[in-house]
Image (cartoon, rainbow, N blue to C red):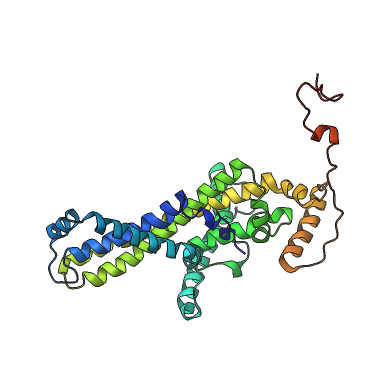
Length: 331
């Protein structure tokens, strides 16, 4: 289970989320490749005026066919959004083992630099500047890397999301990735809107990064015999890199929003489960650890239930017109 596995249901795929995340990047990439073809690629000479003339002479039927084709392509690719994000996180096939080890070692060097930067000098009281820099390093370490070394991923995006999965709810005894799908269903409107907005920003940046990288590969193949026009393939490659940076920052904001949801709404789970509220932090951690083990592995769960008493019948029945309110129900 992953924090990125929770989002809007598939029935909302044709809403704004699908348009921004699914349709726009696919449409832009398709038009980029199509313009290269209309300009004469993969030939040796490009005629951009011919490409623009071709755009101007498109009939209504051809334009409708292009729109329909891109919508179908976006719909087919939409269920692959989660595997796409996981790919950018560094969950790669076994034949990429060498690249994964190289990326993981590179990320661990960054982790070591932050660990060294957060250390305060021994035997002396640090000045404000030193303490401030150490605090910044500690904050970056908690937001960008998981607590355990074996959880380090080969990409920056993977480590930011791994840090969120590892740390959210941990201080309260929760197993974050296991509990998050349950907690998500009881969030308030403001918290849920914040999480969804930041998750949409993450998904959109990831989709743009991958589509732009594919467009760069396709552009390089189409422009291989055009001389200096081959440099056009660098434009989507640069966009892919910028979108990946945006995805990392969006993941930081998403992880922060999830942690805030655990801080503010974790007690909303107990009434939904018909469990009594814990009386102190130690009891909360014990109950949360037992619940996490129950949901994760089906371990034993022994806890008393607390069912709310039904409202009296006189308060549930709607009074007829002209009937006075029951005693104590009104002035």
